[in-house]
Image (cartoon, rainbow, N blue to C red; front, side):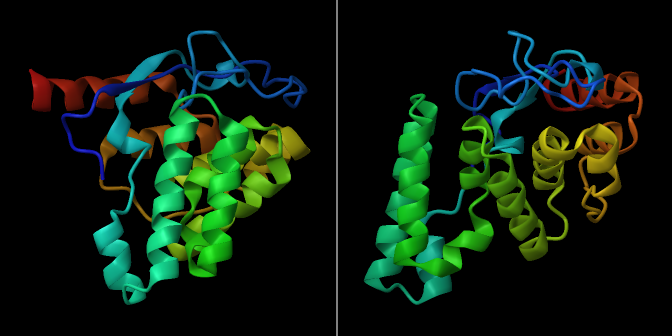
Length: 208
């Protein structure tokens, strides 16, 4: 998992939400959840910055080896995930998806945990497959706030905002107050001000 010293991840709200988000997927640099280029869903929240580790956890090869018994296919699948993440950072989203799919071929057990694949699918406009991936992730980890939100972002492209909210994946209470507010904002159309307040508290507590 990325450490607390990881560089912050710039996020800004996506736009054109009010009429069901007909715009095409944002052409964003990798790992920009919401960018200053003002992609869709802007109505949800203004720009703000979150630590990269909030959105980009990863499982080391050694941990995955312990979970899978250390077989060669599982190790190679782990390396494929790493390569996919690197390609995504470099802007090669199609290449990243190919690596994630290869990881699943090598070790099908990976699929339920490959939220990274969901991001690639989202940025390739493959929203139905992206939603499926994020739903698998949440089924494996019922407390996964971020994947619930990403599933909503995919399904809002498919069904419109109101229907996507009706399908919104319920998760357990996130221990991070700022992420609880982000979750509530997407799920219920809550108040961005509450997110900023919790973010300010977080920054003052850990960096003030």
